[in-house]
Amino acid sequence: MKMWYEREGTDEDVVLSTKACLVRNVKGYNFPSKMDERDAKSLLAKVDSVIDKSVFSGGLATDIVNRGEAETLMKAQISGRDGSLLYGPDKKAIYYNEDYGLSVAVGNSEHLTIKAQAAGHDVGVYRLAEKIAVDLEKKLDIAYSEKYGFLTSSVKLTGTGLKFLYTVAIPAIAKTEGGIATLRQRVGQYEWMIYPFADQGELNESGVYIIASVSTLGVSESETIERGEMLIKDVIKAERACREQFATKKKTQMKDLYGRAYGLLRFAALMSRREALDAVCWLRLYRDYDDSSEFECKWKMLNTITQEVCWEQQRRGEINTQTSQKKRAERIRKILKGVD
Image (tube, rainbow, N blue to C red; front, side, top):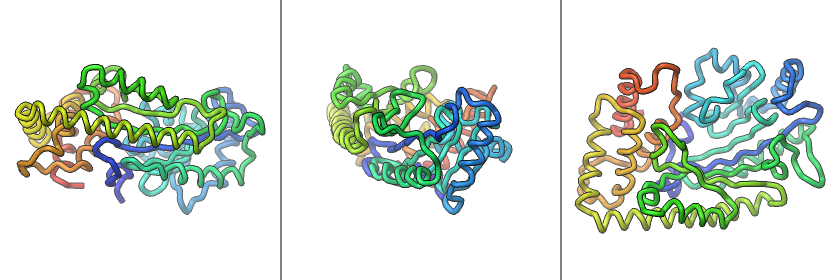
């Protein structure tokens, strides 16, 4: 079974993934940050008793860590960018379906975090998350106010409890002078936000950005999704237009950079995260304009490389060691050769 992000998706030349997160809290318990060990265990047992085991596997985070599944959960974008869901695992649980596209996390910042994610541009993830949420709401006494909506520890999530996110690869906009500033202004007009996947370190110039809804209080689920859909269509159009500008006005330079980037990814024996993502940026910029037929460079391949490099687990002491760079290069070569 392939991971959810290894599948082909709509508008996958720009949109890496679409995610819908719904948070819920159970009456009678403090929020996780204030919860004692006894209540944490009680909550874990209560949720475990109502989880649909025909759909979800997983369980206590301590068991998941002991089974060596932490790296898989990181790549599947379930445990958080920093692996926060696996910190203090004795008070947390994680459930996930076969391709890891659906998950329910217990005991992180909220009692329940329900996530549905899919490759490419796929607004249908909201309905998938909602279905799980409704099922759990029927089985658990969820904290809800007729005035405010779903009650959460974060004011930004009070209301619908919905966080909707698109992960986008926009190297052409990022490399265009004033491109990101203009896009940020446009995103703000929809009352959404955009931020780089990483503000610093090896990933800060990856060309990967997150576009996310801002608040839920007083805004319905349908309004949030409608705004997001209008916005992401603008982003896709703008990025494609910028790529065309690069490809037509700097054709010789772009063709050269494209070939060099492909050669690096396809044949290098060692590869840092920065080198990998920088090369992928150049491939994205010129991929649709390459008429040589010399390179096997499908969007799914580029997206899989991006997802795995951005979300790979960084073990202590392994950052940029020769061993980690060798493993990364081997994995990238396999992806480009179409080897699962």
